Amino acid sequence: MSSFTDIINQDKPVLVDFFAEWCGPCKMMSPILKEVKSDLKDKISIIKIDVDKNQSLAAKFQVRGVPTFMLFKDGKQVWRQSAMLQKHDLIAVIKQYS
Image (cartoon, rainbow, N blue to C red; front, side, top):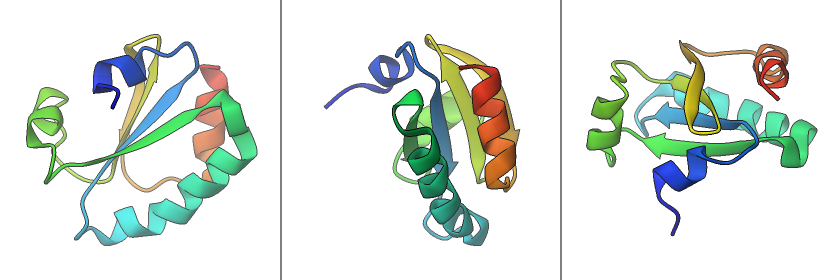
């Protein structure tokens, strides 16, 4: 299994979705993220991090609310937002850093 650091150090953008099972907006983002992945295919990696199961990682990135999205490029955080997003907004942000 790859470590979080290995995953975010890819040369393509990596979208990290910090979520919780009990979070309604997080559940509503799931199909949107699937559409983003199907539209962008290999141009993006999307990983989901359950904040309840990965509390140390959530603390490291100071995730206070869910959903929180972070975009990493070459291991560096280039964008972050805590809120639901529309598909076209997410794709626009990802393309900005592709």
